Image (cartoon, rainbow, N blue to C red; front, top):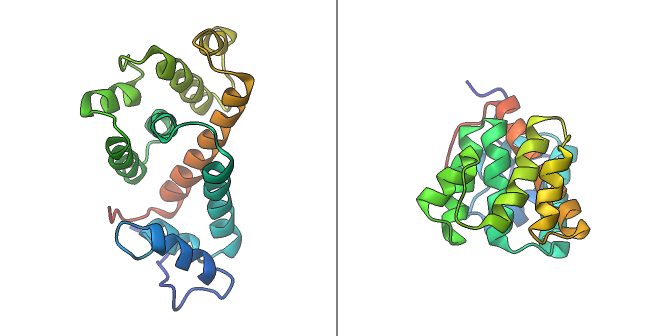
Length: 176
């Protein structure tokens, strides 16, 4: 059972409305998704989410295919069916096959050793309160990931965990 009811753009707190309107424009339904409509109860929560999303989009250097791989790897640890559905959908749109999506969720090889190495970093960080073994970190560096990439991967880890934890916290009903 959901814990936080969903707002519409029209009945959301004034400070949340601009965020909901902008989110609705990029939504597959043309409306805010349930997660955003629930976040709108607290402008601070919705603004935090929107800011993380905007900053990774504006300043991120990782290809969308890579960022959705990181999202999948993190979501598998977070344990949100809703978040997993979103991650799968966008991973497919960005070129991942169903077999590769499953591999990213379980930590198996996708056929792209470079992306697998970076996904291992975020998966391990998600499972261990941000801690990553030296071996996993060095494997990502040896696969060609720079310090900038490894730092940026943390932004995607944070965005995914923020969203997934909110979905679990609010018990959001799936609408996608």
